[in-house]
Length: 59
Image (cartoon, rainbow, N blue to C red; front, top):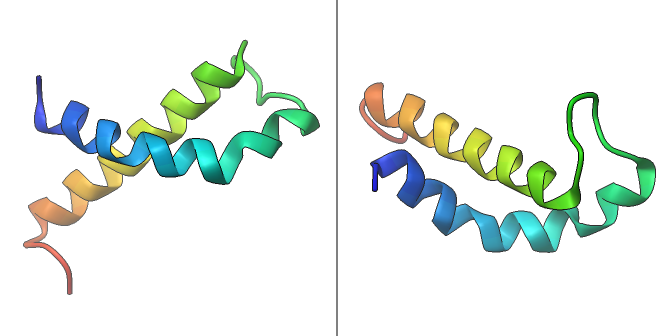
């Protein structure tokens, strides 16, 4: 498991709670399911965390 995977795993619970209603508005292009939408958002958070980490953490 990578640090990115771990960060995404930590984020997924919040993503599900915050984004569960998003599916009512349809999915973005290329997204086929609510689960895929949640995963994309969780990994986007993980990527942002890694980018901030490479800058030396929180400012």
